[in-house]
Every structure is written in structure tokens, then in C-alpha cells.
Image (cartoon, rainbow, N blue to C red; front, side):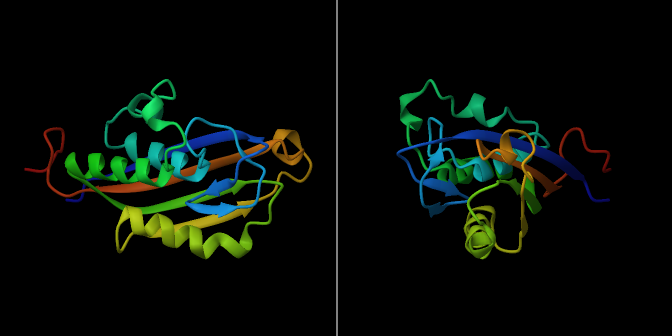
Length: 167
């Protein structure tokens, strides 16, 4: 019997002048996103999608914005820490599916690099899918006020845990 769990992650940040845009560890031209760390909304959404099904606290509880150690931190490094915690709980990442809602910039040329960055943190053999979507002029995303990201992740238990129904 296989023990699988699905997690959903979400993150949203408004644009902020004077900083580069970082998405899945790829640095793009400003404006960047407002946030305490590098504000990588993709890494943040992926992290929360992994933490939930592993029964761990959310990203903000683990790496609070009130803690100066995380000011301008690499969100990919924070995600690496999350992957370690998830693994320590007996889970491995099977796949992540990411949707980035952004009116700007054009993301298609950067999707392969983003997927490679996420795979390098999540582990070899993890399937990563990233899809850009536009707001089509509707709402805050459509008005190009920021970027929103949704992620679904599938985790598989490496060994039966105490709440597992395996004999």
C-alpha cells in the first residue's frame, strides 16, 4: 500500500520598485516583489504545498518575517530547508505543479530555468510543471499590481508512519 498526500500552496506579492524580480530562483528585471526575503512567490507557494501534507507548520511560521535572519534570504534556500524537514518526517516529493499568474513580465522564456532550479532543490526524479497565466486585465493581477502563484504537490511516504494504515 502506498501512502500519498496532496498539498496546496499559494502566495501573492505586490510589485516593489528597486529590487529584482525572483521567481523559482531565476532573477528577472525589476520591478521585483515586495517581501522580507527575496519574495520568490514560486518558492514560497511550493514550500507551503510541501509543508501541509507533511503535517508541518506553514512557511511563515518556520521563517517569520519578524526574524532579521531571513531579510533578503534566498527563498530557494528556505525551500531547501523545507525539503529537508519534509524528508525528515518520512516523505519524498513526487511532483509539483505550479501556476504563475502575472500580467508582466513574459515568463515563457524562463520556464525551463525555473523548472531546473526547483528540481535541483526538490531532488532528482521529481516532476516539475510550471505554467504562466495572465490576468487578462481583470483584478489586481490583470492590472499588473503583483504576482500570484498556486502550487499542488504530491508527497509519498518513504516508510509507514504512526498514522499510516499499513500493517
